[in-house]
Length: 128
Image (cartoon, rainbow, N blue to C red; front, top):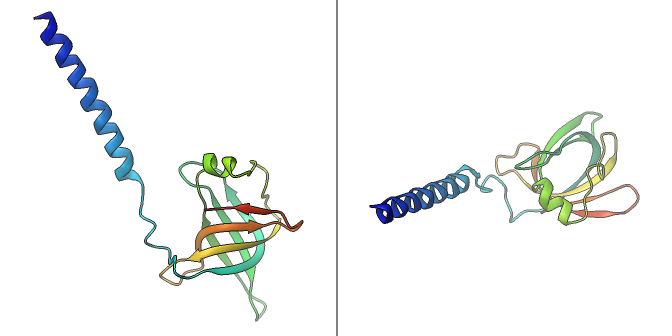
């Protein structure tokens, strides 16, 4: 009887771990909304940065040709990945003038998936 209880407990733990891992995979979204066959570079001013899991986000105000500007929403990798690639929490700050390489959104809205950031001092930070 004792052996059966131990086996049942092991099975419950194994199933719980398996279910937790599968839910994490399902929770992550697809990157299909970004067109990775296209690449563009835009320059602008950082308006907001959200250094949070599961993805860091940048909002960049990009000046237009007719005196207006457009706010770009840029999805980045996780803070953990960015840190491994040399980013620090304060590498990019609100008000910074940056150049960003992105894979644009398929729907044509202003935004995309970050490829890299070039800071005003010429430092390039990997983004994806």
